[in-house]
Amino acid sequence: MKFLLVFDFDHTIIDENSDTWIVKCAPEKKLPNGLRNSYRPGHWTEYMGRVFVYLGDNGIKEDEMERTMTTIPFTAGMVDLLGFIGENKELFDCIIVSDSNTVFIDWILKAAGFHKVFDEVFTNPAAFGSTGYLTVQNFHAHHCAQCPKNLCKRKVLKEFLDKQLERGVSYTQIVYIGDGGNDLCPVMFLKKDDIAMPRQGYTLEKKISQLAQDLSPVECSVLVWSSGIDIMSYLKLLMKE
Image 1 (cartoon, rainbow, N blue to C red):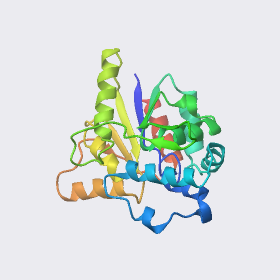
Image 2: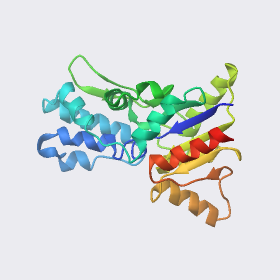
Image 3: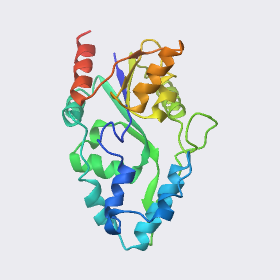
């Protein structure tokens, strides 16, 4: 018996958007209008690339960015939840699928001591170049019309499950914990024994509700959460079964 826990990162594990939090490093803690207005829907990663160039041009160094990022608050109950999962790793495999980047997630998890809770992190690869500027790339290419061009979370999840099956690992249940519109695509891939846990009041919950109203509900069960403690209660229930 083994369960797979799939976490989104921004507004799920942390209670903010890591990409907008980094703006606190910018002069006057804001971006020029021209840069702010250069975002095109579905092209967030390219936009963040321009933000990182702006920060680099303004002399913002890696250590200052790291200091800023590690002040980001965790969502209520999430520290307890991750501690609990860490104590029960024989039952839970745990992955992150996020539209953030490797550098930010790494900093935040390491600073809080949660690095070992997660078996794998799937997110946009980022690194500091020789110039000291942070650069970020798209995670992959895909053909999904629903998802932003850099990341289809369904494709990530499906490929991970296929790879695990090749290793002889299959899961009793997948628990998908997220909040955003880009979490709907992987949720629609889940089967009837799986469970989607959308964050209360956020886009994913609204989209799942809309599908039910349109009489084309998702196949999996749905359990709404507002704190990591709600998720922990459900996992404790699983352990009793």
